[in-house]
Image (tube, rainbow, N blue to C red):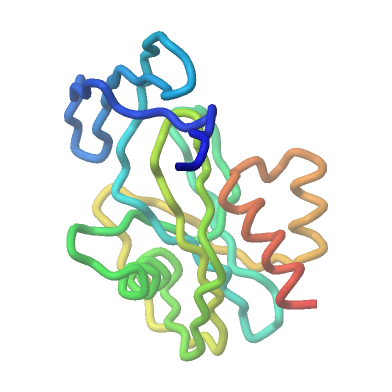
Length: 182
């Protein structure tokens, strides 16, 4: 029998402490096989999301300016959105690109997954590359307001370094974009 990994925790008890429209908050009591004791873990269950590295005909990336209430400011981000119940990640990515930017893409590639908040959330964001875009017209959700703009990869990287881009999923996408577009 293999030696237990001292890092692995197991659930002793689990209790949902908040049930919101988007987020579900849980408080679990956990233990470890390698030592005695119990610890509390509070975390958010999230339905998951997709983010799209959309490459315009110009070769530049499509980005959005959007007000983010928790930060109280406008952020620069890649198009993204949450996965609806029973929706595949591919369908979500296509829907979000169309809704937020007005573009559809003919060429789609799933690049990977990022977990933006591993200390307190199970959220996963599926990263897609979208190329061969055609403008179809936006279909924003009620109350959603975004401004779409194009930016070169180099200028986006500079915007990370000077603090104009602080969104984690966008920064992860720029890492991927540098790998697959150069």
